[in-house]
Structures are given as structure tokens and as C-alpha cells.
Length: 122
Image (cartoon, rainbow, N blue to C red; front, top):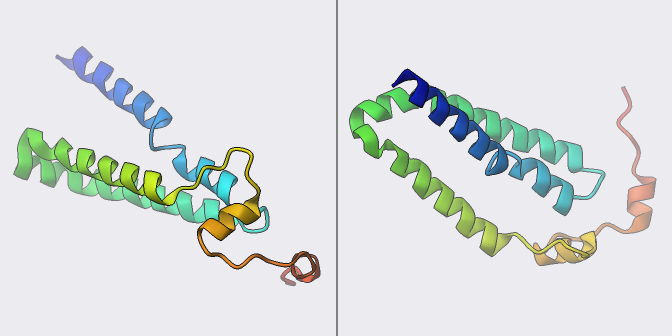
């Protein structure tokens, strides 16, 4: 039984790595301007880590309460994520960032504003 558990854990890790794990990194690279891309990635990474911490903290208690049905919570969350992804995420293939910003009603920056913005001085 121990070997089966290890194999199932490895399958979970592989599925997570090709599933929800890279989404924050891919989305931030596709839909954000280069000027703010690193900030968005930091926020996405923070959300990912906080989710993992909460999962680690609360899974044992939820497993005691719900038993084998605890994984239905993950199924529901993934379905919610997929619905949000299909509704709110624009197609980015061969699209300009200005068109993606227009999709979200984000005011576009003028080129002069981007060029004239000063870096933060220490």
C-alpha cells in the first residue's frame, strides 16, 4: 500500500505541474505589459504559496470531517477556475497588449507616459 501511495502522490505532483501550477506565470506573461509583469508575477506567486500553505494547514482537519469526499472541494475549485478562465481570459494569440487591455477596460498608457515615467530612486 505504501508504494501505491507514493505513486499516487507523484501522479498528483505531475498533474499539478502541468495543470494549475504554471497558470499564474503564463497568464502574467501573456496579458501584462512588460513594465508591470514582475509585480503581477510576484502577486501570483504569493497567491500560489498562500494557497499551498492553507492546503497544508487545513487538509488534515477537512479530511477528518469529510473523509474521502474532501477532494470534491478541489473539484469545485477547479471548475470555478475553469469557468473564470473561459469567461474572463481573452485569447492572446497574435493579439496586441492594447487589445487585451481594451478587453478588460484598462486605460491604455500613452507611449510618452511610459517613456517619461521615472524609476524609483533610492
